[in-house]
Image (tube, rainbow over all chains, first blue to last red):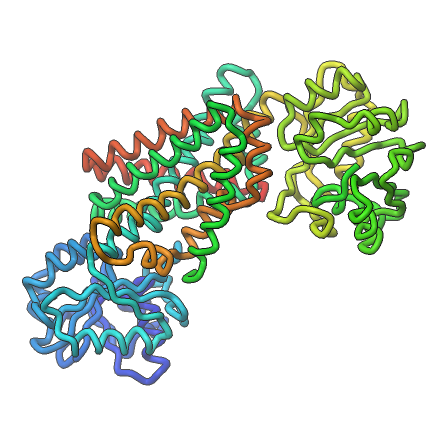
Length: 284
Length: 284
């Protein structure tokens, strides 16, 4: 259900392996383009296309996933395993477990790119990337197993954890970096404007001319898709607020070292950060 | 003077173009390795190697640049144009203009990589990258011109601006991102540890397993060389403090939107950041 980046990529990989792949999309124009791109064997805007499916992947944006269309709910085959790909898991479980019970498996394939929409799907997107499942207490082990097989079929690394732990983790490593990078872009712009007023030189032009690949890297996710960033913040606001509070404390600690001109302590803090970073590179 | 990343790369490019390149280094072991790598035509630990040079490039770390060795000062040819490559310009001018007057040209080739030392020099490092000069009121136009020719000889983009404007600009786009990224690494570590105590699951392992290329990008400069980061913060502490204060304000503004659950305003702020980012990608 949905043929954006995740749904389209999944369709391409599964179709290439000879699976029967049927897709439900919202708009006829999307269906036409998806057929041209051969993202699925059958593409329709009619929910009845799901009839007979044994495994349904809800590859919808988080807002539509959390407010499911009644026509979609009515068309879900009564014994199918249903899984999703949303980037926040607590609210998804809260919405879907009451609806489907033990045959719903909350999942999160972590394979984002900046691309979105029917043009975004690509072969091999999931290869080597984490695919996290957050089973609830009532999740059917066989349903979970079906989703694991799906994830490993497209080459993903399978992981299970609790929904709350997942949401806290992605707040720290995925949702917080969006705001951190966005604030940095705003600072480069506003800080240059403010100083330009005082100095006289064209600082806004200078910061743009001098920004290097380091600045580009630091702000990549912060300058990403604003709809996605907003949906993630909205869906995970509690964990994100905790992460922001923690981040504020860490930044203030570094700032204090600069204020105090305690260069030895600053060097130690930066060295500790440099030692930390390789620990976070395994999954990328 | 110095055959690290900048000095070594400069030597390789100039030597390849047939220029007479002589290098002064601190240690005999460095000199031996530099000769093996052919980073310069003549490499010596004796300051007399500079005799007769018409253009001297001080390619030293910022701390050594700001506390020049008396033997180096004594060996600088009396009419040579002298330039530096330090990443902060105000303190460099303050130190070197009184020593050399109009024949000193403060410069900053912006071509950093994570590498450092005698192994780091590489061909073509400066191609297409900014090389900023910050002439003072007394700088000899002919001396400035000599450094411009040097920069363009190795393919750099030549830029001139005031030292204060340069230092404010690099605080915003180069020094601030170091602290922003370092704080993010500390948050991912500490935030996961704190939540692990409360939750029971192994959140520190989970954040490491789930961190994606987005997290890697956002933290690349924050997990970089701690000596370099500390020297830059130390050399540019005033502009860095202003940048930090501005950043704190921008982040708090975004945080407030999350607190208020004002998703429309958050979306607009993220969209504005997304529109800003391409303006900062020209130089990289």
